[in-house]
Length: 173
Image 1 (cartoon, rainbow, N blue to C red):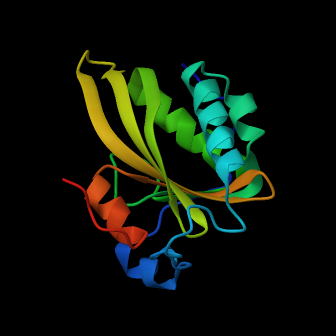
Image 2 (image 1 turned 120 degrees about the horizontal axis):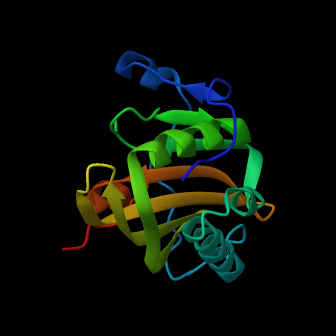
């Protein structure tokens, strides 16, 4: 599966020493007794669900309709040859191009949506097959910041505990 776009624009690879200079992506504020913040609500769950459905159909441009043109797209930790930080639609396209050059039959199925202050943590079952035939089925987490009905920041976590910690919630067993 190919993702259109130029891998040269919008992609940054930062050595660990530079991470301290990047914008903070630490814990989100948690408002006790409140399921959604004023900035985030049930419509954001539907937005993410719809975007993931488009992803599962390889409809990349449809996914980008839900992504802010200045999005910050991150992996929480180094992952293969992927950049830890990509910016904007061109950066996301380049990220997807790299990702889909290594994996086929990629499927992301949301299992649970968890409001976390102004963010939405989505527990996801990620399945794919490598080009060498290795099948992967892993439960991961995606963290979304949504403003004006667009994803403005996305962070993927291969370890769910790290995602819970990042948004200031207790990990689940």
